[in-house]
Image (cartoon, rainbow over all chains, first blue to last red; front, side, top):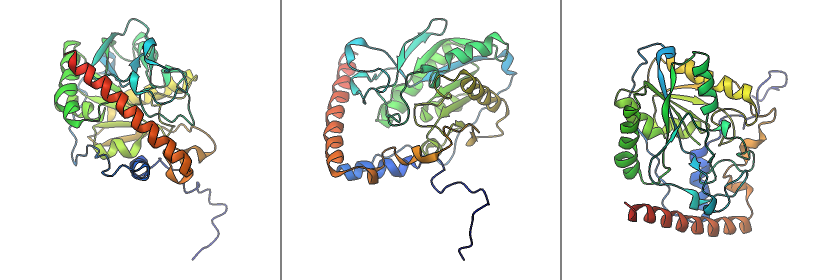
Length: 180
Length: 126
């Protein structure tokens, strides 16, 4: 059965998307937490096609990053997980201004990346460039911060409707959501 | 984030999620997902690499224009490294010593308490 696979150019077994669901389940179980976190899960997904050319669209931006809060402890590149920097209400910022956003409050891969360049998780610079070149019509006047709340109820009943209301106010034609 | 995309989409606004956790986002079930096979924290391209970031946003925009239906994933062709070994580390319990597991448990409990305090304060302020 086991013929040599040398020369076929196959990638190593572990060179595939990281199995986060399983990793995280095993991790917390071994740490001693009984009932595993239940991820939201749907069999179907809604779909709204884009009905006009992107060059005529106003594009919204949603992020899970948080504004830097100097009084909330370490939030710089490579900072350990810092729950004090979390936020629990949707916030908005002016897309014409520059912002100091951080991701120390979420579980990014601290072993292999340092969170030193916010453009890697908050593509406002690139979106502005896309507007400048006419690739998109324009960037929506505000971006919005989505809380990373473990409660599905709060996310579904409070945060999602709030984001929708703000993006409607902004008259966004389509939205880029960037998950850290 | 996946739930927000679903909610916007169900209410008539097309969305695209950029992210690095393929199995999680697909498990939730979203309209459009641009997957970068990078360490968590780099959904919009490689840090300090404007070309990579421009390429990633352009992929997202093209995807927004052309997705044929919901639950569509596009995988960015960009590679984080020539060596895939970084994929073995994240939250990999098999790679941690008993001492490290104990330390992480204590730290997790501490951070959970802090998060609860921030949440309670937010609620009290409303």
